[in-house]
Image (spheres, rainbow, N blue to C red):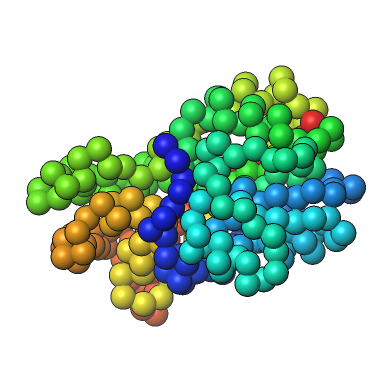
Length: 257
């Protein structure tokens, strides 16, 4: 599976830019590399973490890699170097001191091969810093898969799925610990306070719903989104002030050579 993301809409993704950026801020704050020269944001999307990485590592060459030309056009507006590439097969021209990835690697399968390969892209003393959603069993994600197997969408969406489940923490530990000098892992559950009509649907339209929406005809999308919203509402009721809460669990790892 690639993460080319041709159909991704930067405006839709950035509709909740503050909420989506919060895990990146938390991860960047934990990276400890005093002499970083080359810093790469792998799966940089619209590039909203690039200025944060530049501030954290002054003097380093900070660049972003992503498969979406539309997303990279937004990232380039901030003046950072970018590269359009499928991150499933990307490798750097030279070793990287900090390889950062926020909410991107969960789209790719076979982490048992992927993560050791990314460690191989690091310079001596380098750090791999990764954040991935851990939401596969949550209604936000599970209901997408369920609807995609029902009529009238099952025929059109046969073989289509969103990001695969990530591994368990113990599996990542056993995979990475023998290969690195230090390894930190943790989970954080953010509770996002969202506003507007069906805001959880709007959130998903910027990320995990994209494979389904891209596969549907334009005339089929409103019905699919309406059914998804109806299924979601009992799990995310409107609060007394009109907002909707979205608990969102994320997995973090810092692996340093």
